[in-house]
Length: 271
Image (tube, rainbow, N blue to C red; front, side, top):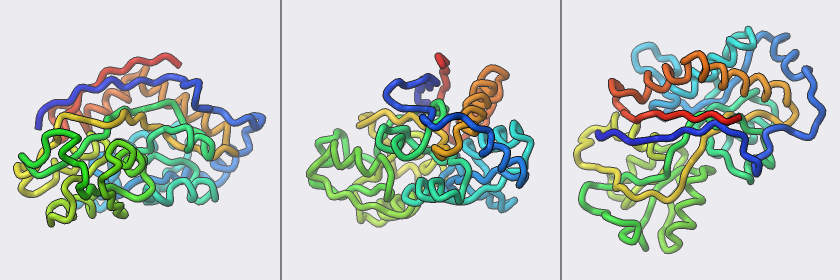
C-alpha cells in the first residue's frame, strides 16, 4: 500500500470551545483517583485504532495507547469499554465512561455536547471501492454507499453526494462486507481507517482507495463538560507525549513504514 502524507496539527481552535464555562474544579479527577480507575470508551473492531488482538484477546491500538498514557498520568488503572459511533457521546454524557478515545472527529455540533482535547490525529475522508469501478466523485452519484451510524462520515457523504443512497451500518467491518457482497458501490470514512480495513482484508488487491477526498477529519479525545480538570490533564498529556517523543513513537508503532498501514507524520504544535 502506498504511503499517505499527513500533517497533524495540535492547536487551539477558536471556533471549538475546549473548556466549559463551568468553574474549574478538581472534583472530577479526585473521584477518578478515589475509584483508582479511568474508564475509557474505545472502538474494538477498528484496526489500528482500537481492536482485539486475536492472540492475546486484549484490546490494542493507537487510541488505546493514548488512553494508557492518560491513565498513567493520573496514576490509576485503565478500564476499556467498547463503544460505537452512535452510542459514544450518550455513554460519556451519562457518566458511563470518563473519556472517549475512539476516532472521533472534532465538530462544532459535538462540541456543544462534550469538550474535546487538542487534535491528536488528522485524516481525510475517502472511499474504498472495487478496483477500476470508481474514478471520480461523480462516478458515485446515484450509487449506494456504506458507512457507520452516528459518524461524521455519514453526514459528509450525504452532503458531498446528495443523489447517493447512504446505507449506515453498526461498524466498518459490516460496511466492508456489504462492499464485498456487492450491496454498495463504495464505503466511506477516514483514510487512515480505510487503510487499516484494507490491510486486514482478504483479496485486498481487488480493492483500492481513489485519490479524491471529501473532507478533513481532526480527531479529539472526548471529555464530559462536567469534568474540566480532566480535560486539562488530557491536554497536558498530549503535549507531554509530543515533547518527550511518545506521540511519534505511538504513531510509528501503528502507522510507520514497518506497519501494515503506512502513513507519514508531521506534527506542528501551536497550543
